[in-house]
Length: 137
Image (cartoon, rainbow, N blue to C red; front, top):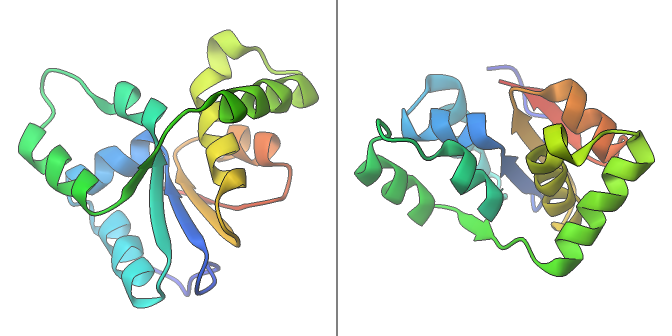
């Protein structure tokens, strides 16, 4: 792992791939989580991400343990409206990009600076429009 563009006191956001890899104890994501702890970064995910990451084969105890180590931010009406505005601003359709938009709105509402770990960097970069550091995992 190279030096982090994340800044102390900011927020690290996990999208569904980030959360899934944390559950699997993926080396890269585990490194980011250790860095977050060391740098006093707040680690969050969107409640919408829980829906996306849950499937019959997920290791439920590992998921619950991972969730206990981070903050699950609710999808409030304000977040939903912001997500809809992000979709409108980028010309993306909610049918395909709804969860990415909710993750992006959650990230943008978090204390900055914000770093998002994602498998969809292009979508998150477009939705965040330069207001968050986006790292492909």
